[in-house]
Image 1 (cartoon, one colour):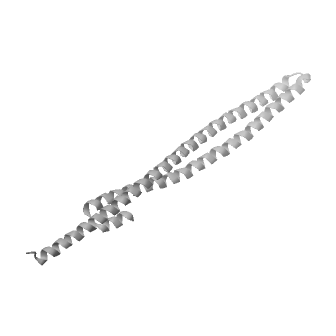
Image 2 (cartoon, one colour; image 1 turned 45 degrees about the vertical axis):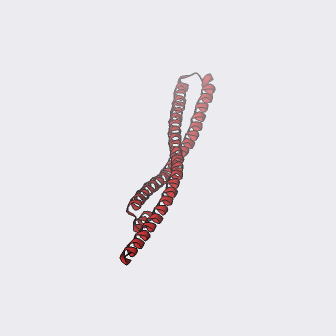
Length: 171
């Protein structure tokens, strides 16, 4: 003979198992979705890191070229100054040649200054680009960490069969 308490206990157990099965199914689907999203975020994060590396390389290249232009300016100005000093001791017939050479070196110096300043702007722009990309990379790193925590909480949820823990994992 079947006891009413046994029937109630079996029904309660069946309901508990059905709830646990539903929870496990929801957890499994959620983990799959989060893992897929995490993979997509990782690809985007890697692209941002590559762009950061390129911005860093660009910045360093621009500053190196800037320094080279600085050296060229110094050489041109120094050469022009030396020619001006040498002109004072040269015969008057060579003054026009000295003036032409001095003007050429002054023009080179001015051209190098212009190009140097353009490189400075490019280097500063590359640095700003790097800073912005780094901010976005930090956001992706934070999302990676939060998604990993959510997946860990979902694993605990699957073991404990506690719906409230599932809700915490989703927040």
